[in-house]
Image (cartoon, rainbow, N blue to C red; front, side, top):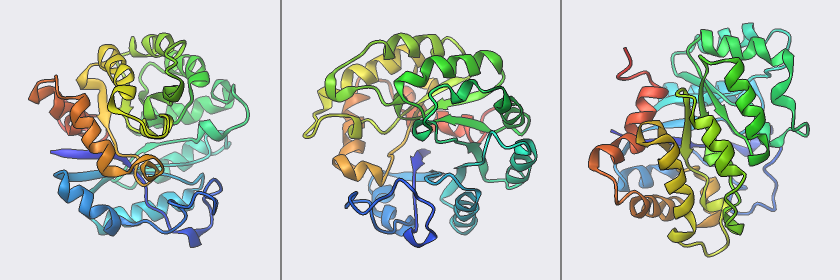
Length: 278
């Protein structure tokens, strides 16, 4: 089963997408499941994981309502305020919904680069573990050393690093991103998403621009800890769903069918949906 483990929908009128401005012309409109359906059909994708795009619980409830109405939505990665004094109770309430599979603070948008190190987040991470949720790490390369501290503090936390932590693909820069990712990959419960790469590449990117980063991810994590996602509709800023899906086919061509199946759905099913877990 193929799974798109990272895509978004939104309704502008909801009003909580602070980053979504009119100058982001390709994105500044409503996107729903109807708009993504042609791509899912074209690429044989049966299930999706919806990922939050606003730092509000209201948006998480909106995504869960979509999941309730559309059987193709296998799970939702939502949001809550990890630093709130009642974060464990908030997480418990959200986790009561069977399609809530993970949580994602928007770390890349937080001004304090050391936010992940705050002691008042520890109860939220503990609650994430308690309720069997995934921590989706929306981080940038400069956050990776801080994320490592979180992983060391919480060895039972299942982590998925979104978008390979957005390495500097446009500049062809590999370090210190690669070294930091190597340290994180040494922890078996840390996973990585092959997603969001084309928006970090130069305009007019080619598959070979992406290849060193995908090869590094394969070397460090292996297919059983890599998860594919479209990052649609954000991908429309750099070529779109089809361009990224086709690039992925080229990038994964050397792998066996079993390895490809893991990246394109099997790992997501095991990590997010607990399919195949003991």
